[in-house]
Length: 379
Image (cartoon, rainbow, N blue to C red; front, top):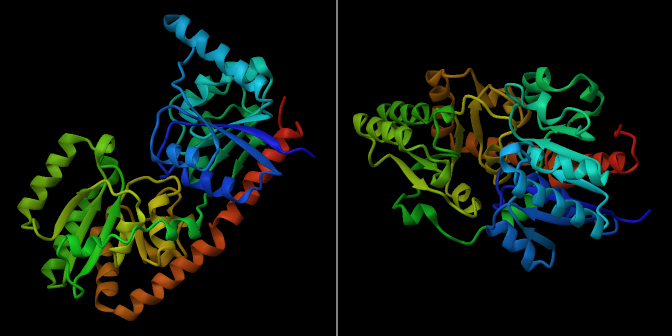
């Protein structure tokens, strides 16, 4: 059978949470199996990396079809239909479901089946509108069981048989090799006797970063030698929330012990500086930051929410949502016991290698692509 020609549509030009699984899968699937074309909605580092590797990459914004936007949306549809036909694309992989309305009309007109990956929960009536016939995708891909449970009421019933929960993945070898040699600890003046706690992600209320700040305060009150680092920023930073966190840091006298260090790319440089990763978000689908930290041999602790149970080796890594005291007890154990940290870090790395590494995830994506191409999931 000839290689499948796939148009990958993504709004994320960084090799980050929504794109690392995709990159991992396509890095394993041979070009005898899959020939990808990439459509980015904006330029960025991962898009540029793909260009440098010789991949077929287009950067173009896509307009959602609407009565108020007839001209630009019609041009989008016409261009996309022509691209699909001219390049003999077999199927479309829409890597973030919020972009599906921009491609669904062209996919329908060109009769190209579409795989839609959901990196967030479906909310409101988006799914019932976006996935309604005759624009139904061939496959809906959820990344965790909890994500599907919270979203299934918004999935049209006739799509239930075409819905798959695959988990997520990343290329462990690529992640580890992306380190630049940057010594973040040294740059920040952190000595080897200090235990560094870290968390990464958007600076937004749902991340509950105030819990991370309070965690650092509780550990410092026990005279434990810890420093907390919070990575993230840019467009993912909500200014009023960041200001409230700054005020909390000042109130708890943590200016030297809890630091916002901005967006770090590649993320590997950040994880290499950590001893323990802590994730305090109130909701996660399948947290890539947790997976990345563990792949780097960093033990991880998190709240028992969303898909976190599926992203850690066992329940000992989890505590109930919002119970900072329980989180502090588990972190304190790791701070005090170097050997326990090492053991838990080794276990975390092995878990990612065995359950989430690129070959494991790629086999699941291969199955979905093959089923779509064979027409078994398309009405």
